[in-house]
Amino acid sequence: MTDELDASDLDQYMGVPMEPGELKEPVATNDIRRWVQGMHYPNPLHYDEKWAVESRFGGLVAPQSFTVATDTSHGCSPAQVGKIPNSHLIFGGDDWWFFGPRIYPGDHLVCHRMPYDYKVTNTSFAGPTCFQRGDTIYINQRGERVAMQRSTAIRYQVRDAKEKELFSEPKDPEWTEDQLAQLEERKLGFIDQIQSLKHDKRLWDSVKVGDQLAENILGPHSLASFTTEWRAYPMTTWGATAKGPTTVRAEELGYTKEMAGFEGDRRMERTNPELTDGAYYGPSRGHLQPKWAQHVGMPRGYGYGASMGAWILDYVAAWAGEWGELSSSTAQYRNPAFTGDATFLSGEVVDKFVERRRKHKVKVKVELRNQDDAVMAKAEVVAELPND
Image (cartoon, rainbow, N blue to C red; front, side, top):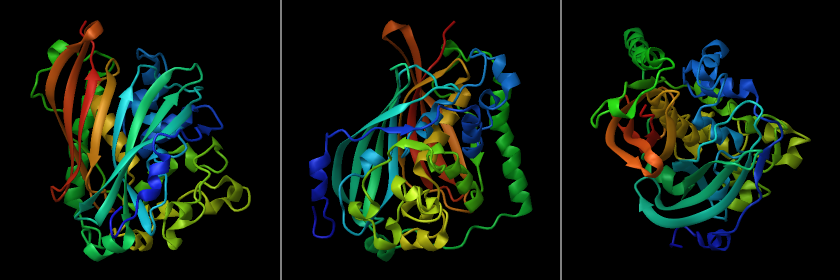
């Protein structure tokens, strides 16, 4: 608790398990295709059945980033319990641990959640700010742990963020036709990295510390691209959830009246579902509606933290190839992706090591920057590679 931000209500929830999240339907093939389309991930292993049938999987398989799409709150619920008056929320980062099982069409997952911890500190964005963490464990129909996610939510008072105006440019940057053509040309390097490796193995012995990953470029982002991302989460489909995302209304968490709404309210969904799916009303509408972005301290429409996490995981997975497996990731999100911005991903191998049971692993440092060279995110991703 500080003089300006009261987080004392959060104490009663720390370490207390929440109601699990669960979608009604098993994973569908087109859920996976829609996901990689929404995340701008052109890996045919996840959408082209002819390519996938020749892979080691023998058919379409979800990228490991898709795990978050099987939740009913993309990891956010356990990181936003408790009331902070007159507040809003953005994502601040994610940690992931993957345990081996992959997700295929027909799988059905249940997401078990528990708030982890929180701290209040001063930031240049909004002054006193609460960094709150919560865990989600993803378990499939066979009782196998697929992954664990520890999300960080940044909860702040809207008034303070608007006064500080850290982000204050309301107009999208302008791109010339030549610049856009150059971006599309540069994107081909990332695609070629996938296409040239095909179904071969990237062997651990072939990788050296200092190796650079092919850059990837996303954008320029737009309200249309952010909408495509949002609709790639099955939880945003009317009637899709069996449990969750929460039984708590947004105003009970302290959201301002204008941003509270009925997002995720399954009782309201039976009557007026447009009020509940996050695109038109409620806390998430600032992403897609510039007026409401400015209401919460953002200059214009902005992207989703959970999607930024997927960009990072997909980036390293594409380099590792279909025989590689992501083991863990830790990512901090520092600046949102705004409409009109482009995101540039770069990666470098910074470590190689062998764990018990002869697991050969590499650590990749990843950075996301925009066209003005502002750091959007930093991450370290560990991947296991084959060695024979």
